[in-house]
Image (cartoon, rainbow, N blue to C red; front, top):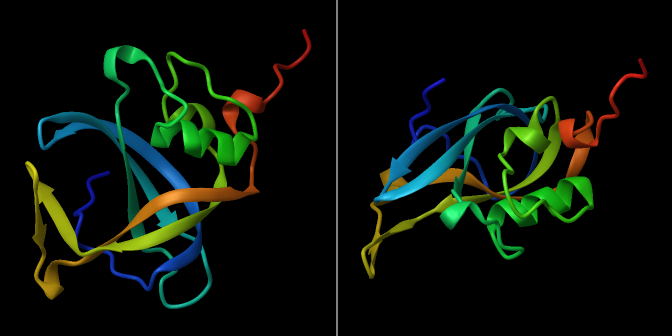
Length: 144
């Protein structure tokens, strides 16, 4: 499930996306989770892959201001646990409404570098709500 960052270019706005999976990696010296999604809206962008990236919480503690916390609260309408939360805990099997933005520059240390026009790419900036499915963390265990 490898995705080139620069593959997907769509106009900024809200799109219906489906969660495909998540992998751990390092970018710019920081441990991150790379969430893979597919655009589900009917039209010319249907089926295109798109990425959401989260920094992994430092020392395992998740602050309320962390992007992962904000996404959890937007989808579940609950406060996230302070430890142990991973993207798959609340995204697996869900279709979501996502805010998509275009990345036009990158930070290199303390400097912002403008990317050439042909290197711009789209990414998920955050989630607005859930449109289908039920997050795993909200599913009830079957009665035994």
